[in-house]
Length: 222
Image 1: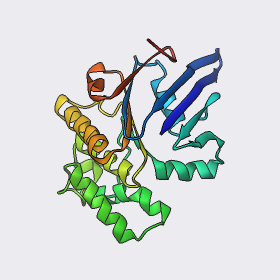
Image 2 (image 1 turned 120 degrees about the vertical axis):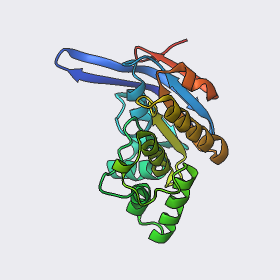
Image 3 (image 1 turned 90 degrees about the horizontal axis):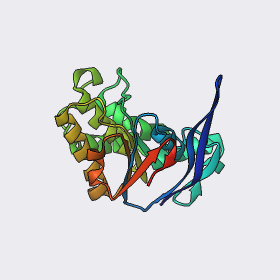
């Protein structure tokens, strides 16, 4: 389902090149759950950005459902990313001026492939699945950080992505909210069959994963 081949990312800085990711290859089957573990600055987020179609690799390829995503044009990649990849980041990234229901529906509305009423019905169902059934008309500033993160998961799922990428989704949350987010992500993976790739620095959060990938200094570690 997901295959990364010899991925490398080098950043050019005033002090010279910095190798953030060095020759990483990995595979993840459809419906699988993998956790990428490593210290801060180990290259985890750079790796995820390449897999998610956000940052072009210096070397290597990313194949998702057989499609080499970095062989696509910029417009085609943007469309593919919106349809097939969902993102949950440390910052929820909800638009403050929109209701939760609108935030969740927005990625599907932008595609204009189905009636708005159908999109909003699905968005309402996703909010309910995330324990936010009573908050469709609430604004992000009116709910807690943990609730915002659950709304962000609902938004990431609105287009029924093949792959859900979660980058440190619980790093700034208390233990109760962290447990809620991890339960929600695990449920999406186990019950909906969505392939999940979680990046974290906390080994305890990776215990539920089928596959744990250790990265250090930009490379896979034994």
